[in-house]
Image 1 (cartoon, rainbow, N blue to C red):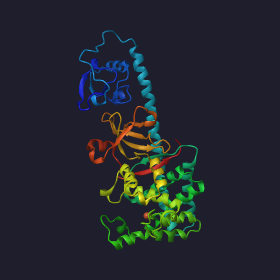
Image 2: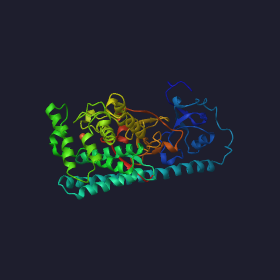
Image 3: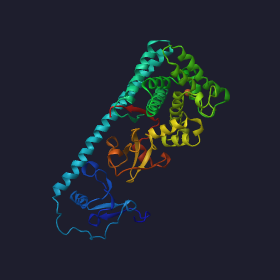
Length: 423
Ligand SMILES: [Fe+2]
């Protein structure tokens, strides 16, 4: 491997050979037959294809190359290529066309998932209001809603966790409930819960914070350090929640325990009762993890928001005594080291943002790629499961990203997740 410190430089196409990592300049992604605008040359035919595109110079990236380009003129083609130029291009284009079709399909699925997510948030709003006014039908509607999620998770198809678009501020409280529900149920599925337990978990998670409806909005939105009386007032949402939900006979005892114990910690440092270990129900321990993760990655104070990657790291290091170890390990295994919303650098040097993860193969997430040559709305989405040559190299802190890349990838101000059951 050549010295990593050699800066990239421009080379003539005649200097290229297999093993050189190149970037095509000023070439629209749709007008060349390569899968990426930056790639390592694997075969002579790729060099021939670059020539056929009329390109005379490319950028060589020594850091990613196995060999350096030859001297000017060294590899100059003296006789016509043994392959038919039309055949070379046709072969490359057919692979790329297949990839474009997959990309369009992926985009369609994400769009569908976003519609279903928006519908869900819309459904939850009136259900919660009816529940608060004591309407008994509201609980049955909520259960029907949760059953759909249980079916999504426990059905034959794999359930893929997608990152959704930003929600308007007014719906934040519902998107928090929905996030916690989806994440807790993802964990429940991984833990092998029965469908009855999944329903109980979903219902408990959906209404875990319903007691906040009795707390002054101004206090809930307050930024900065809270006084002890203010903290006490907010912590009372747990008791209010139990009060509200115990009025609904159809709300199960297991779900009620989730509402009552979602702020209890394994080391006994939580509230309201300071329960520890097995004194906290399994479903409540799962919900506490989903709740903490959503709180950290969607912190009400923007200055304290953690990237999904850092939120998981924090829970696993500094906060690990608070959570059920087994469930936390499972949660991390489901979300992957790089959860949706994480900005990452891939092994070919490109930068992207993780859009979705399949909890059963979380090492291969779908990543939307930053490529200034492709309009943002047509950005490439790469499924790492379908591209064995590519892998995630590291996560990148948003503060280290140039504004241009930030704008292109538009990392979410809120991380909201939903599940795609049909993939
Ligand atoms: Fe809460």
